[in-house]
Structures are given as structure tokens and as C-alpha cells.
Image (cartoon, rainbow, N blue to C red):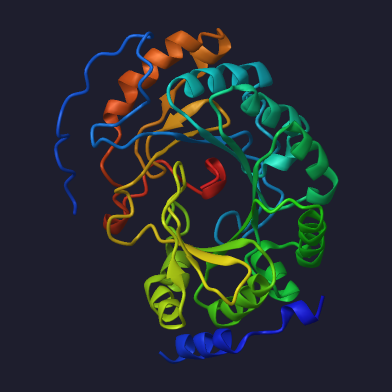
Length: 364
């Protein structure tokens, strides 16, 4: 294991270089035509963006105390009104028939749901769904992964904000870094390679985390994505201290010979790079970058059945009545009507964060 963590010289130069160194939305171009349930065209917003990617939160509950999200931990117990499995089945049926091709199960921390494997199976049961993904802090991952894989899991995203156990514990409040890395090795050894690692860019740790990340993907066929810290309703002070733009890091990588991957169908917003000397790849999710929202293909549904057209939007659209009544046709009609309200872009540059108090509400 130690040999695989040897830092490549390009990563060292990259790290050293780092250390040294629209208010108004446009009017929709057209008004969507009314749709009937015999219309099989996919959900498309007024800006001609096909909405093929659903992020489904199945719980708000989280067992970590991340400094950037829930520094005091989750307050209370899991909410009693989380979506039930039959409600999720109705939701998936409606979204799949409306053009959704990828579903990402998120939280909070989704592994805290005891029926997680059943939820994954329900998502995979719709024949139109091409990929089911899970985003997790990897709590209990080694124990539950076989059941999730058997249920149809295609992709796995794991949050690792530092490869240094002490720094990891400072950020998350948990001494789990080595356990997570061990479980990932086991999963890779089993032949499952659909793994991405999410690492938050924090100013005070970047000089340490960047070279460690490059060392990790040197010999492992995984994609590691750096995510820019986003402002939410309760982290303004932390955001001002710790936000670090990904732009300078991307330029450094390009100088080191990293090349941009073409964007894949139904993919998220990450810009991903590859290098011939590395088994893995590296990506960036930079919500403050220009044109970040231009290719948005996502809708989000909370664990209480409320849909967000934008992560930082100011309105949550309640789907619960349709779900309780197993009314997938009614839900489809509502979806086609509602996506006409999807904004062209977020307003983070104007310090407008919408309804999001913290990212555990929708899983980011």
C-alpha cells in the first residue's frame, strides 16, 4: 500500500506551484407547448436543456460533523416523513417515463437508510434508467456494498476530503479515513471500477490535499473530483475564509499535460481531465465558473418529496400528493408544467443561496 502512495514528481511541482502562487436571467426563448401523456419526448426546460438526471435524497440524516456543512452535527433524529419505498417507486416510474436516464441516490447520508438496497433496486427496475449511482461518506460501505451492487448499483461516489487521517478527522469529526480507503481497495479488487471520489477544496488544506490526491490516482482507475466550496444559508463566514477557486488549479494541471475529457451523456457538471501517466483521472466541479449552468441537466427531489429545479432556487415544488396516491401519470403532467419554471442559472455570485441552509438538505 505504501508504494502506491508514492508522490509523482509532476504532483510535487504542481503542489509547489500552487503554494507560490449577471444578475438578471434572460427571458425564455420560447414557451413550451402543452404535453399529453402520449408525448414521449424528454423533459426539457425553456433553455433547451434536456433534464435527464435526477438527484434523489432519501434522508436528511447525517452521522458526520463536517466543518463546511453540519459542524455541530445533525440535530435530532431522522424525520418521520421520509419518502417510503412505494413512493420512491412511483417517483422513479414518472421520472423515467419523462426522460430521466440517470438517478443518483443521496442524503444526508443515504447508507443510514436500512432499505437502501431496496431503493437502489427500485431505481434500477425502470427499464429506461441507464445508471443508478450512490453518493456516500462511505459509512458502513464495506458491509453494505455487496447488497447495493446486487441491487443494481452502477456508480459509486465517495466523499474523502483528505487522505491524511488527522486532517480527515478535523474536517469530518470522524476517524474513518483509513477504513474508507481499505474498503475502496477491496471494492476495486473485486473488479468494480465505477468509482469517483469527491474532495472539497478548502483553502487551508489544499497544499496538502492536492498532491495526496494525485498520488492516489496515479495507480488506481478512479476519478477524483475537487469541488469548490459553495455558500449556503449558514456558512457565510466559513465560506469567506475557505473558498478556493478551481481555475488556477486547472491551469496548473493543463501545464502538466492533463487533457480535458469530452463530456459524456447524462453526466454531471464536472470537467474531467486525463493524463497518460496516471491510471485515474481528475475533475473539477466549479459552480462559480462562467457558464457553469449552461449544460445543467438535473432535477433534485428531497427526502420529503419536494422538487428543486435548481440547487439554489427559492421554490420547492411539493410532489407528495402524487406519490402518496401512486399517481405517476398525474406526476408526469405536473413535471412537464413545472420544468417551464427552471431558471437559466443560479445567483450565487449575488450571494443568493435560495432555500438551502446546508447541503445535507439535498445532498448537494
